[in-house]
Image (cartoon, rainbow, N blue to C red; front, side, top):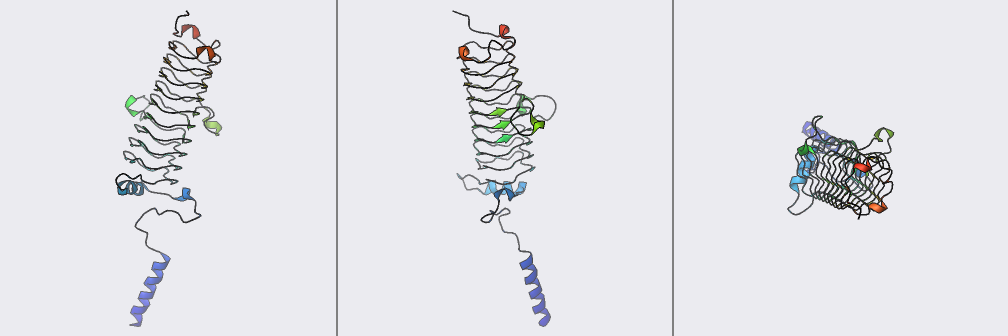
Amino acid sequence: MRLASGLAALILALAAANPVAAADPAPAPADGADAADVKLSARDVTARLFKAAPGSRPDLRETNLTRLDLADLDFKHARLDGADLYGADLSRAKLTGVSLVGARLDRATITSADFSGADLTDAHILRPTIFTTLEVVTAEAPKFTGAKLVRIRSDGWLDRADFSGADLTGAVFGGGASREESLFSPATLVSANFTKAILKETKFPGAALKYARFIDADLTGANLRGANLTRADFTGADLTGADVTGANLDEADLRHAKGLDQVIGLTSATNLDSAQRDPTP
């Protein structure tokens, strides 16, 4: 009898020292705890997404999702504000309508990821991985159609990405996107689609924007200094106050563009003579 009582006491002591995990694999931090310390597994994320009640938004704010394999997940308009997704695999993920305000997606894999309608205000997407080979494949480029990308910081290889209808006010692409000197390289956005996008005060210093489409886009005050705009299409775009000093405008389509008389550095841009412009009345 005494032996049984002793064993029971020992079992209780061990249980107190090693409490069983709660049903929720990633409980909210206690008051005063740093939310960034909440490290979830891919299984935890999947569970939270699928347990969310119909019509509700899964809450993944301020969580640590670094280097997780989250490929092919439907994030169901989740709230990911302040989340750390450094190095995460978001290939083919459905991120439509999610809130990623202030989130970190540096070195994330965003091959074929769909961010349409998402809010990425103040987010960072430095050195993302997009293409699975050295070949540019349109189907692998991410979509940001109608997304809110205000003051986003990004660089790297974003060729053929779709930013149509997106708000990129104050965004920075390339040099200056990061404080790390090693990341001070021009962004490459060859054949990117900025049709009807808001690009007020957006910075593209030295960016590769060859064949990019800026049809009916608002580029007022944009920084395009030193950018390669070869065959870029500015049809109907508003370029009032934009700075194209040192930019390459070889065969760029400036027909029906607005505010050309207020563009900074236009006369000093290279290959201006080969750009397509409306005939002088």
